[in-house]
Image (cartoon, rainbow over all chains, first blue to last red; front, side, top):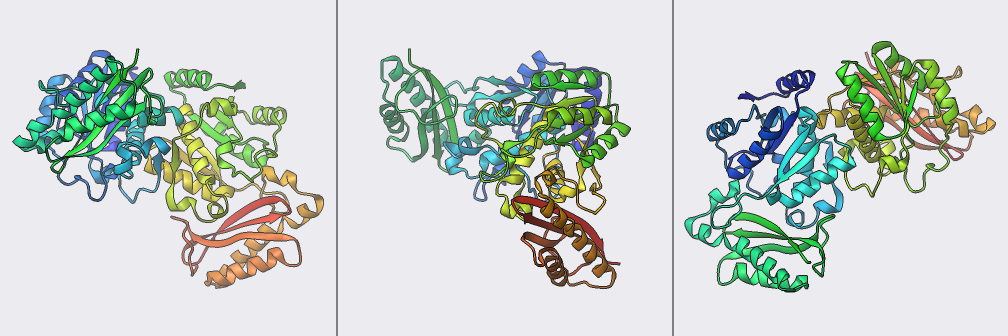
Length: 282
Length: 282
């Protein structure tokens, strides 16, 4: 496995791979790998000649009061994990390499970026869409692998790829979970033991919502009400949002019809956690 | 020469060219070709294995009150002109092909899009940057050819390419002019004989500005004052802007130092014309 630090060196590799007609699988990450990342890497390794993982904590997707500085990093561990997963290249540029001067051009994805996580994380999805555009233009992969945990991010990127005619396929892999159901996330490392004990409630509440739908509940507000109650009951969890949205444009639905994404964001102490499941009314 | 109507067909051609390692030159246009377009085509034909010209009157760069519907079109003539210039492919998609559903993702280029032409044409450069992103992703050229007449457009696109890491070189060709100095433009076809007789004043005034600088004038406001007077003197020309701006970020300068772009936009009757020259203080 090779670690590449500059855009020029990355482009040189890409053009060689292209001439050999190698298919390129790409996993964009911010590092601090957990089994969720590994499942994306393995999906790519299994289906492509070459797998490239980008490792870049992207400052333009963090708000001024967010956790950019304290976002967890562990390059040494990440290199071992990626190598074991069969990754061929890690692209790990510096911030100065990716943003050598004040960035003027941004990719804006419209209304889909202003709801759910976008409503409280202003500019977050603009930063995501912009850095993914940059990475796609540098790496020019055939397939990009994303995790279902970041459902809105997946939707934003899919929309951007469609609207701007990027020539890449998207494969979405299921959310990797701890044994107790907690969605794996680099941010889980911030949780104190007490907070960690509360965190599985997100997924438990989402599973309860799925049961409600299976039992015939179709009223989104009832489902949202029960999820909020289950998560916040008697503890210091603050709910950022609980939403039932359509799968196409992520607009809120009143009734559960067909497939609906139930998405949750909370703060436990200072740590922001998200999770989601797709429920289906038969 | 082949005319291609769909993105799928265009992509098929591109991947064949790529496998043959052909270099691709690209000229983005809105059609109604004049010698300015031809000079871009010839520059590309001379330096690349294959030249692709896109011909697409892009609705997202026209404001609601602008001349989208009446923008001049003449595909038959354009095909002849491009063929004679040695072009290999014309990519002429429909609006439905380029914008199959409501566009959510746009490329925004920040402050550089809000000045000069951007100040009066709201959303214009966002539309330009977005459609050029789409075309670059479809055609993946090695070199893109642009005309100096659209100096701000060139700057917007250069900035976008840099900031979003598009892998393409830009070649800027000089403004093609009529014998009397009028910058060639598809919109010149709108001018009545009386209006056409007035139109060369733009370039005459810009040349006068160059003389002023050569004679030692360094005060931008003096130059702007004289240009306005020369253009609008006693006629129905309305001035949209006259500006002296730096070449890097197109911000207005007070004094002429080094190279400065002197840019003019006017309306003669209903027709909007632009022109510019670079002046240099020694």
